[in-house]
Length: 198
Image (tube, rainbow, N blue to C red; front, side):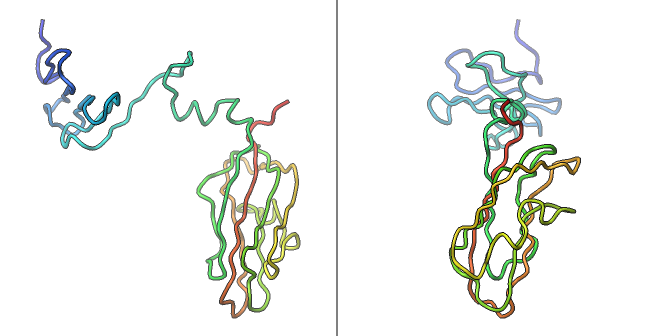
């Protein structure tokens, strides 16, 4: 028995390479979906029915077998993934505005294991400092005394520092620019682990 419109249309059997799943306003509605196997060989895509191009989200349950699809939440919170050390990288230049903020929030109770400041071009001018931490704890991971922006080199601070602010925190580089600076570049790396292996 055929399914009535507007629920499913363009169902042409196994020879078809796209199926259109309508929404309440019809086959080209704002939330209508095209199940597309024609974009690239062996690639199945969900596209927006109204334009046939925009990709749409697919939601699935938690995987239970090796070949199952994994959700973003599952990957982000999987114990095997979270037990692995991860690295944040932030760039600093002589004319950077302070603070320099990471795009990723280190989760509450995660541990920072190392901070490294790589000064690739010495900062000129007078003065100039950088510390590494987060809002309310600006020197939590590295104080200004543990690096020297005026001297090219690599400055490491090994540690086992827990992030205990109560929520995820983006890493901040608190930068005081050297007076009269015209040159200077550095990369700051932050190693952390969400769930340590025991």
